[in-house]
Length: 454
Image (tube, rainbow, N blue to C red; front, top):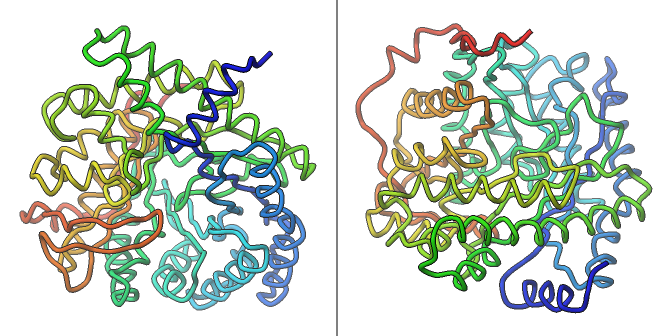
């Protein structure tokens, strides 16, 4: 039973410490929308999304009113569109048409974002999947709510370096298409290794083929709550630090579990998973970097940062799995630069570099996230950064991702403005030495020896 002290404590987390449910994400399978006729596919997609998701936003608002829990975003994820459009899309332009349909459906039901304009090419890339990837720059430029992802590697299959090479160019094209908005399109595109089927967070959400026809996934947040809890044990030993984070993560996850169960019941759609990732926002006091500072680091990026992140990530998971039997998605700690004021401050102070962020991704939830780089960065350099990050995921059997934003017309030290939860970011330097001959080899980096599990 929940006692009155726990109710008071949760209210305090919401009112004073930025606790929120970051998203309710409704996953919808579009496999039954496939057809050889593109117009039929578009009609089926629009009809299915607007039918199943018609009450999603209203349900989220009702739960907010009933329990006083802020739910920041209501989102939809769909089956990777390269699968849905395989029989009807013969060119990148055809896929752009589907992106426009997804955007219209998302607008109709009132959600913030719709994810799943995606391709899964970790072992090889069909012409159909290549067409979708080549459509991404235009699709993200002309739509408002569509998010895209491409899975180019996995521990089981290795890394598709042809796709990695192509995406270096695609990211630059996407930046160019949206250069009037500080290359904002790139903020809606993420490149994955070991992408999960049930991630509720954008831009990487898609509805995996192993999922039910529709499912409710919830992503919670709360770095501000963790920071506040750590203030009460300032100077204590690591065991005390870990216990405090673990107990706090338990409480945060219970809030998410409540919201997920209520949304599932009200919409009569199965509950999938809770993603208990600590996702920062630009708001003061809602920062992963400030947690590091509370642990005793001068800035994120100082020596000890990777150890602090490893500790944080592990204790968040340990507390979360005790609070819910359905923890999934990414779950841990996100380290996006533009969405975290403490990270921005660390970059501006010279404490945090791209190389240190890469090291941190070995122990965090995802990877290089929302990082602004100079607009004149070479495609091969972007591909090299992606390859490095994919290798970390492949070898360590974890999800890694890259969301780089080469801001057209801006260079090191300039500021890129993205707005809302996406925040703003200083343009960071990248290593200027060439990797072009390496990237141009093509083919596939084979799976590591420990991938052989059967």
